[in-house]
Every structure is written in C-alpha cells, then in structure tokens.
Image (cartoon, rainbow, N blue to C red):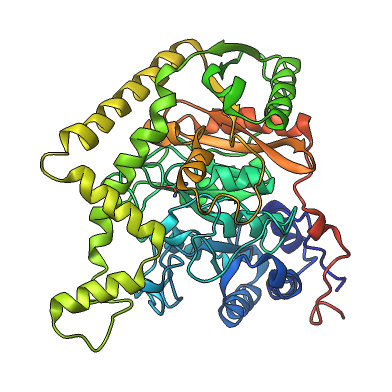
Amino acid sequence: MARIDVTGLTAHGCRDLLAGGDASAVELTRAYLDRIAAVDGSVQAYLTVDEEGALSAAAAVDAKPRRERLPWEGVPIALKDILCVKGMETTCASRILKGYVPPYDATVIAKLRAAGLVFLGKLNMDEFAMGSSTENSAFQTTRNPWDLDRVPGGSSGGSAACVAAAEAPWALGSDTGGSIRQPASLCGVVGLKPTYGAVSRYGLVAFASSLDQIGPLTHDVRDAAALLDLIAGRDPRDSTSTGLRGPAGVPARAGLEGLRFGVIKEYLGDACEQGVLEVFESAVKTVGALGGVCDEVSLPSVERGVAAYYLIAPSEASSNLARYDGVRYGYRHAPSEDLYDMYVRTRSEGFGAEVKRRIMIGTYALSAGYYDAYYAQAQRTRTLIIQDFTAAFQRFDYLISPTSPTVAFKLGERIADPLAMYLSDLCTIPVNLAALPAVSIPAGFAAGLPVGLQIIGPHFSEPGMLDAAYALERRLKVDTVAPLAAGPGVSSAEGER
Ligand code: GLN
C-alpha cells in the first residue's frame, strides 16, 4: 500500500480511493489520524480525537465485501463539538458541559452513522457558538492554517481550520449568524448554510432556535452537496424540519447563462476592506464571463441586521441556556450552601464572559417594560429584512456579496471589542434572519489570505445555488489547501506494505 497523501484529498477523493481498492478504510482513517498527530499541535482544531472509535468503525467497514457497502461507507468526517454523539464527550467548548457524554446521537449523526461514515472526533468552537474567532472556547485557541497568528473565524473555527489543514476531508458545523460561512471564508474552504428547516437540529445544542442550522464545511462544492444530501430531511424530532424539496445531487453546471445575480449594494463601499472588495469585484467579472448577468440591488434593511440579530439571538439564548443549572448534567459547583447558591456558583463558574454577556442582554431585552422597545422592535426589523430579500428575488435568481468584510484578523485583535467582533457577520446575519440558504466559496486571496464569496438563494434553492457555485468554483480555481498542508504526504505506518 502506497502512502496516502491526505493533503488536498476531498471526500469524493476518499470515496474513490476506497471504491477502487487503493486504500482500506483503516488505512485512510490512519492517514488522517497521522495528519492530525502531525499538525494539530499547531492548528489545535480538535477538542477530542477518537482514535479507537474511528479505527474500529473503519475496521468494521473493511470487514464488509466492497459491493455490499454504501457509497460513503468508510469515509472519515470530523464534527463540531456542538453535535451530540452517543458516547463521545460533547462540550460546546464550555466548562459547564465539560465531561458531558450524550446518551444519544443527534439526527445528523445518526444519519451519518447509518451511511457508514467514520467519526474522527470533535472540533473546537466558540463557547455555545457565540463568537466569530473561536477565541471564546474555554479550552484552546484554534489557529488559521494559512497564518498561525490569525484566527480561523468562528464559531465553527475548528471545523474550517480542520478542513483547510487536511485534518479531515470534510466537517460539520452550525450557523446561527454566519458560523459556517465566515470561518469557511477566512480559512479558504467551502461552507454551506442550508435553508432553515432543511436539516434537523435534534441533538444540536441550541443557541438561537429560530436561526440555527447545521451544514457542511468542505474542500469543494460537490462535497458540500453530497454532505447536505446525507444530513437533510424531515425529522419528527424537530418540528421545524421540512427537509429539502429535492436532492442537491451532483452539481455539474458549466456556465451561468440565463441566471441573474444581484450584487448587494450595501456591502460595497466602506462596509468591506479594500482587498476583499478587489477579490469580490473580480469574482463578479467571472460571473459575467460565465454568462451570468450581474446588477446592483439595494436591500436597505440589511444594514440593521446586526442590531436586530444581537437582540433576537441573545434573547433566544437566554432562554435556551437556562437549562444549564448544575442539576441534571454538566458542571456543578459543590459543595454549596443551598440550591440557589449552587445555581449561582455553577453558572458563574461554568459560563465564559461572552456567554454571560449574551444571557444578560437577552434577559434584559425580554423583560417586562423593555420587550416592546427591544425584542419586538428587532422582530419588526427582521420582517423588513425578509421583505427586502423577497423583493430582490423577484428580480434575481441569486444574490452575491463578500462573505466576510475582512480577511482573517490577528489573534487577540478583536477579543476586547465585542462590537468589532459582531461586525464580522455583517454580510451573513441577514441570511439567517430571513431563513435563506447561502454558500461561501473561496474566491481568491488578499495579501495571501483567503477571501470568500457568498451566494444567497431563495428558500430551498440549494440544488440550483450549488450548481451555480460549482460553475464559479471551476472557473475561479482557488487553491483550498493551506500552505501548512502543502508538505509531503503523511505516511502511515500501517499504510506501508
Ligand atoms: N458570530 C455570530 C455570533 O457570535 C454568529 C455565531 C453563529 O453563527 N453561531 O453570534
């Protein structure tokens, strides 16, 4: 068996290796475990690596005759630590859940398990998915594989960094205001937030339930479509889930003829830094070169998206996070004087600063006397944003914008300034407020750092949206393997025969 070079290997590539008999599932899994051992000391994407579980799942695949295997059986994947995996510690990067081992699988995990995927481990994130840099993790600081002094974005920073560093062929993340797309943009990989309802959230630890969605982070659009099809579907355990209207299938579109793209005006000008705008403008030209028609469109209410989001999301979080009281699971302060003392100390010690800030904002915004001025007003703004998108989709098939207003920033640069951090999601938040699908694809580089392009579609337009993204990806030809990952292939002791 030749050494398996996992750098640049897509999930489709893994599937081909397995199908062609060029690698066993154990060899493939071992190659990723070796890669993790080689680079995760510097990237720090993983909170948990389940070497034993992964190798035994892979061995079970190898024990089956190849013709009896399902298409993705034996392909490894890594998971944001916000997804409940039976028997695997799930912390949401919070001290309050340290040591929590779920007794059940999230629906997406059960689906991947049934499809035969191999779980490599759990990935770092901002605590309870609150943040845009992964610096709010209680446990470690994940670094951007393109520049180890910079953040990977967040909150799915572990997922994006892990894919960019070839520590897994693909990964799952979650997106409440941009947490899949923004880190995908900063780490130069593909990140897809599906339509609200496309994917069940059962077993996804809740942050803001009217906004949360699970989605893929991958090297390319075809992998994103395949992973979406593996996880999407209606689930009686999540009453908001509807599934997709049809499979995303295999994107194959060559050109963009006949498609109209609206360029969101509010994100041009001062909203984004110069290097990002230059890459974006060149991507707009590429859309034109492929036969797509681009025109500017104004969505005036999106400028109020961040303000509305930072009332709605904390309000929902303040309610969702009330369950962490030290009584049933997770961290508990002990000994305590009485029940009240136990609650206070458990929550004071268990939650980090950003989570506490959100709980306080949310509790305030929902309190009697302030509800109308804050929460209800934010909901009215949300309606205006939805109306702006509805109007835009009368004229355009898809809307495009930069994914993030800046490239990856330096570690520590924004951590003391919550408002600067919140603005990282300027271009992504309105999409969640309107429950729309959007994908970020690598569009180029500014000063050596990745820049993502965001494509937003109407509800349940994933198949067409990914088809368009695929055509663009093929033309843009952006490298998705970080220089860190560009070294020689990782050899596997068991792979050498
Ligand atoms: N960065 C945003 C926040 O801090 C979005 C997070 C997310 O999508 N989970 O809330």
